Image (tube, rainbow, N blue to C red; front, side, top):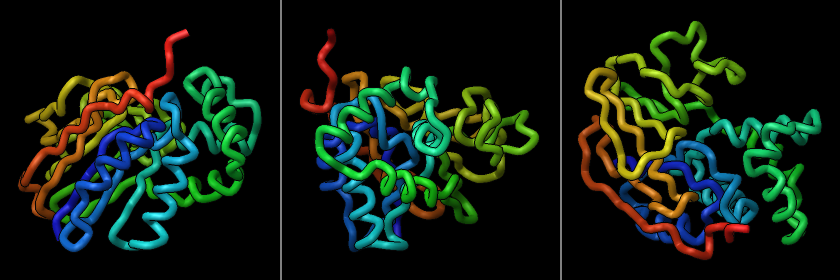
Length: 218
């Protein structure tokens, strides 16, 4: 099956729904590369949809852990996590209260998220394998797979990451990597990347952020 990789969603539920409509479930494995939550207007709804898709499609749908999932887990486990609260977490808590969704149950599900998806040709994670990380899978390291913003290591596979937003997907030839975080929550667009399991690009899907997903400026 081919791959359909989706960038950082950040609570943009309506936009995420539109992107999911572009998923060919008969031919593609869905992989979302982290940061489902925070900053947009629909974090609980995004998590609810992701859990439903994982339950129904099992090994055909994968949701990778991002730094915002990590931060939310930390807040619920050892409160308060003030860094998360300042980075959109406070609004996410209000959203959970407003819709009456069980945040602890969702956090238990977030704990099960893998740090990456990979095969012999493609490696998909939230922030990538850094050139300098001693242990890239350390979830607390600033150079780790959840947090890295520096140059990526060429691991002889195509890396696909998010985490650092830009206007359009960016390819780095030296590390053989794509960053597909296109700032959906800041009013730009959500990006989906369709490719073969060999890493060969098939198509791009770009969906402008629905205004209903964006917080009103105060």
